[in-house]
Amino acid sequence: MSKEIIIRSNSTAVDFALLKDGKLIELHKQNDGNKFNVGDIFLAKTKKTISGLNAAFVNVGYEKDAFLHYHDLGPKILSLIKFIKGVSTGKIKKFSLEKFPFESEIDKEGSISDVISPNQTVLVQIIKEPISTKGPRISSELSFAGRYLVLVPFSNRISISQKIESREEKSRLKRLVQSIKPKGFGVIVRTVAKDQKVAELDNDLKNLYSRWTNLCKKIQGAEVPIKVQSELNRSSSILRDYFNDTFTGIYVNQKSMYSEIKDYLKQIAPKKESIVKLHKSHNPIFEEYGIERQIKTAFGRTVTMSKGAYLIIEHTEALHVIDVNSGNRLTKSKNQEDSALEVNLVAATEIARQLRLRDMGGIIVIDFIDLMTPENRKTLFDHFKKEMESDRAKHKILPPSKIGLIQMTRQRVRAEMEIKTIEANPNQNGTVEAPIVLIDKIYDKLEKVFSSKKYNNVKVFLHVHPFVAAYLKSEYPSLRMKWYLKHKRWVTVVPRDAYTYLHFRFFNKEGKIISFIAALVNKSTSLP
Image (cartoon, rainbow, N blue to C red):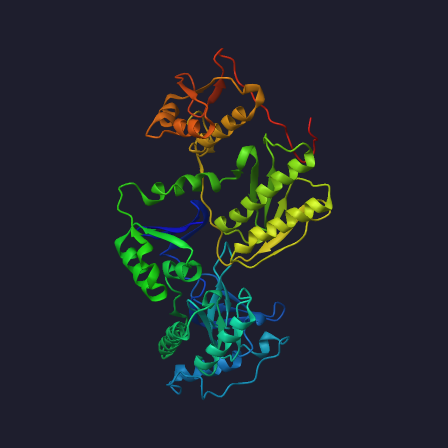
């Protein structure tokens, strides 16, 4: 298994593509214009408290006020407010919390009006970026994320990642962190800290503590509202959160970004520095690694899967709906139940990928093909949960309902990734899905023809528009040659001037149209 990160940088944005065995699994975009990223810390001022919501609206400098709920204040909010006041007025000049007198913790079920008042200065962190008509969601329970550790001011708790299963390793890490952490600070030990030496953890902790002291320096005499701490740039944060020893390549198209990433890897993984490569080809980097093509096929309303099955993905303000369809899927299964299960398992894998790729959050409802037996429904549910394990976003999946729907929630911290894949219709007015998808449709139909016993010994002629014909026969090895190497059957490509750009048909040597219809599996009809 190979994992790669492809980074495309230009004057206005940076795109990050994560590939697993050459397949696009995540896509991120960093816009220079976004001033309210998850992790950014602001010195802000409260505008008003709403008792009915048990929350406050806070001015962080965005056009819409940020939302601060009582449960996001943190138990040590009174200590934080006292500290900020002391730093702002110059009474506190040393930023260590070792000798700072902590206030008592607030009541877990208290009222926000008892803690926060209007026009009060607070230190807050973005936990959810502005989405649609809503302003950012914020928390006053601050955290500083590093490679191995997360530093939490005004806490003494040490937490170990639940993904570290070994009790001995958990105990070892807890002892190490206890010996190096500063007093008044809590620490969360991340999964990648497993088996790391104390020197690595100590270096990470020192970097995080320096970010805390730099933040405090900016508070002195600052005008409110103001950003006092930015999250790491997206390239560093992506590497911090995703990079591990399984990555085999990081490819960058810009020299400055290349140097930046190389320097960062020197700090966190010096042995992996050599996997960073500068893309020097004239061919755009996303074209070179087949990412543009994958984007065109993955971000439309309809997402095709193997052998004719497909997904329909609809978005509303309240939720996302995903419909699973078998299409004209060719299957070896002898009955409808097995065919439906086969399609559903393939769909579950693709849906897990789509959720990460599009960063879909909130409520998600999935309409799988109906399964009659409880065993098959459990198999599908367990498979989907397993596929979702690699998703870093917090999520909860409910078992199939009585009407066969799987409902789930997925954490939403930023706007969903949206890419328009429709283009102007070259044949008539209106729009169509990206024409590049046409090649996939041709190959899908071709596989059905080759798999049919009816056309086992039939010579196949593909009639297409001359431009498409040229594309299929260009380069070496051509697509037509790749088809031959895979199926050991030759396809004669015939250019047709009379055909429109998106039109294609298969013929036999007698000139008769080859029409292959696979056994149909859908939600309402049985197999013929």
